[in-house]
Amino acid sequence: MSTYNFFATISRMKYIERWALMRSSRAEDLSEHSLEVAMIAHALCTIGNVRYGRNLDADRAAVTGLFHDASEIITGDMPTPVKYYNKDILSAYKDVEKTAKERLLSELPGDLRPAYEKILDDEPGEGKDDSEIYMLRLVKAADKLSALIKCIEEEKAGNTEFRTARQSTMKALEKIREQYPEVADFMDEFLPPYGSTLDELLSQEEENGR
Image (cartoon, rainbow, N blue to C red; front, side, top):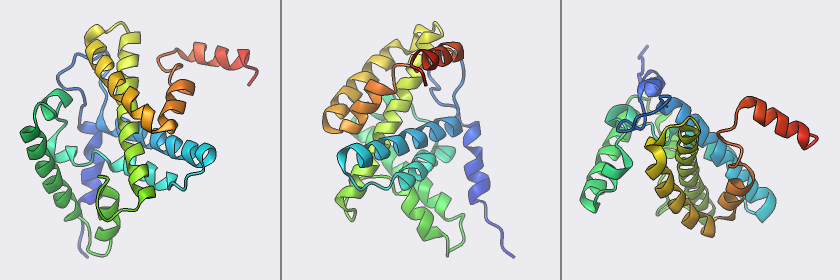
């Protein structure tokens, strides 16, 4: 029987460190980042469905979040200032990312490949309906929110290294929240407690009578 490397390769996300150019108080790996993006993406879609009458696939958003950076197992995490330095670098990185995804898909048996090809196709674009495009954009927003949360946690730990990253990420999210009320709701209702200690979180719950 043939064997396939896909899931063994995916499991190596825990070895890919994010924020490579930054001095962190605590290292963040790609695996934990992906889990956080998945949870936030699911929450954003749930908010959209419950509060705004949308028909978004929250479960698929979560799975897309889990795999959204899988190509970085091969490419590594390119720092945002480098990736977006100019259009040529961004275009070249997109080509490398596409090749990395194709490499990952080649490590699956043929009958499973189409299902995971759909999961790894996380770019809003042609061939997708409006609901799917909206869902994928919320996954992108969840990625930004996860980055902001990392900046908040680092600053709460007394690390000023992430100050500029926090400002630029917040600026990007302020634009996103104008278009996506789900993001605005999450930022207003769920973002403030991030960076609190466990005692602070629990005491707040008690004060609110929950």
